[in-house]
Amino acid sequence: MTKAKVSYDCSKCPGYCCTYPRIVVSKKDINRLAKYFGVTPAEAKASYTREYVFTEGEPDEHVREQILRHRTDDIYKTACQFLDKEHRRCTIYEARPDVCREFPNGKKCGYYSFLKFERKHQDDKDFIPSA
Image (cartoon, rainbow, N blue to C red; front, side, top):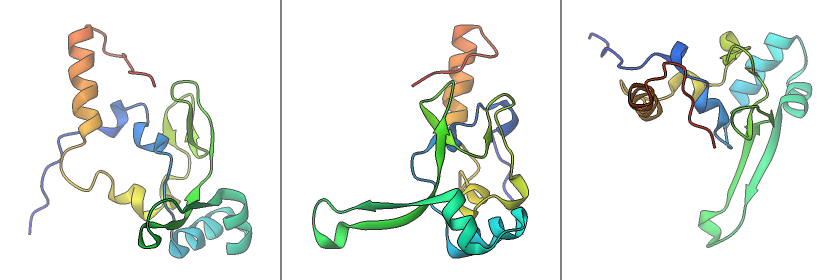
């Protein structure tokens, strides 16, 4: 089985996916972070994640997740704490969560397509749409 060729280039993106407000992590991801940083899973969970709880609507719509912590960002309001603000790259790439490894879960990235379009039409190869 051959892998489909992707039509995006993460190295030309300012890390838009890193600004998603809820970057969900699993127990496996927390264990990977713990190993990467040489701490216990409990320490990794406390230091690098927080609990997200959404309880509006019907009880079956309630959400309780563990997500990566954010910090302020110069381009977007906030971003994952592991995004290098200057180079716009993941600082824990080898230990990144599964959701990051799978993104965008296909051969196209909608944000990258939008970014290419804007850069072409703005005639600015470094243009970054801001929030």
